[in-house]
Amino acid sequence: MARKPNYGFERREREKARALKKAARQAAKQEKAALRKDNPEGEKPDQN
Image (cartoon, rainbow, N blue to C red):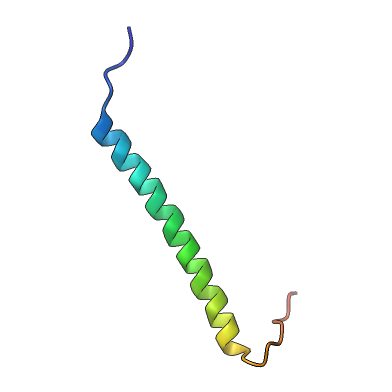
C-alpha cells in the first residue's frame, strides 16, 4: 500500500533546504565582499 502524501510537510522541507542553501551562498558572498573591501588595490589575499 502506498503512503499518504503529506504535501505541506514536503513543501516545508523543500523551502527549508532552499533557505539553507541561500543563506550559505549569501554568507560566502559577504565573506568575499569583506576580502575585497580589505584589499581595495586588487591584491590577492595570501592563500596559505
